[in-house]
Image (cartoon, rainbow over all chains, first blue to last red; front, side, top):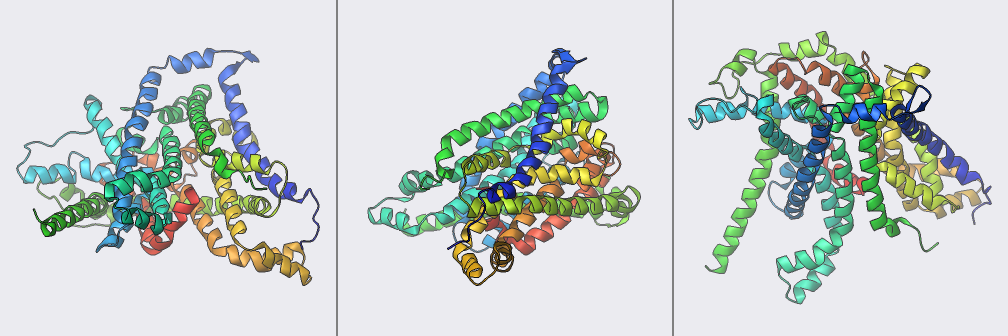
Length: 285
Length: 272
């Protein structure tokens, strides 16, 4: 039997962590709201007006949402295919797996710069295609006039960099699926696609949900990769927040953009918790 | 088409996929490494797809003249501080959640879960004002404190699941033989939980090492590596960008090569 402990003991153990989070997340959140809505000691929408009427705001919002909407679903499909392939035993699996997970430990700045060596006007791809005689002048991917190309490039580099987040979660999920289910289905004559659709995917659902939530929320605050590759050619919300704080020193507008990202993230998280809440509650107690 | 050709075709298709994956993931890493050490002349020569002449000048310049080495050290200090802070605060909380039953526990767990995926660095913008008041602006401790807030919920959740996995009975047996709860935690539970805690520590380290938004907003002269590169690269010539990529990517690649086996299970579980 356990010794009797004071009923306050668990609270004392939990309190430091909660107080810390209150200071570093709760307080900035409140301070952020104040920065946005208070001016000269009273409620004011001046900052909001300034933030919304900023030339870069709507493009930034549009680009951020656009990138999320294109990148996340594509990554889910890619990650599923890759995880199913990597769940097999084959020659070269270790090499492929190592390469696949490297971006997970890479900063987005590094990933952007790595791809710049491939895609710059004097980069590998251009020189390769030139010397193969497939093109006659370098393909330009950078510069404001190539807005669409820059956007597509960002999507590609983000796919390279962050598909791994979904991949590892789905792979871990796959490895937890008991072989007995699969074998039972095989016994009853289910082919590969039937097994995939009716057994594997449904059992993967919790992993897929977690992975999607994580990726969506991280994607809302996409910043480093955009900043090093295209700067403000493709404005994004986090980039504008950074710009306002470091260049313009307009903390109110910066806080507004940051707050917007926080709200979008919280909303996504709330939807997710509603869907999966029951799994985390210890009903049996 | 008979079954044999069908089988071969499937195999061919599968290996084509694997080949594409290896080239797609590996080629940019290889090219950027070669370009990092290639001479500027070779880079701007349209006929040199792969550089033939190599130099350490660019990397040296970046590390020792432009502050890369300093920033690298700063990054390590910040990451280690973040581990220490988030463990000091997170371990007791994780332990309490694993071992005790108390009202409000589910709410706390849900809260941690919600914050685990909250982009805490975004909170850096209002934190600037607080940091100016507290004289924490442009300090490594300030960045580490923000990074700790980002990883704390994860540390709490991971340690809670690790401690639920280690047997409470062993701990209680220790207490029967006269240890206090704290002693029996220190001598019995902690050693058992060590591998899992190491995983959580690595996770915090990688997160802090790569975080750029908070680090850039909260500092101006004491930069971490990604924050320094972010500002330097706005104006740097191309070949500096590749050297910067190498300096940042090299530790990551070595780390993955060594720890790959643990990484996948660790991340799969940690992120879930």
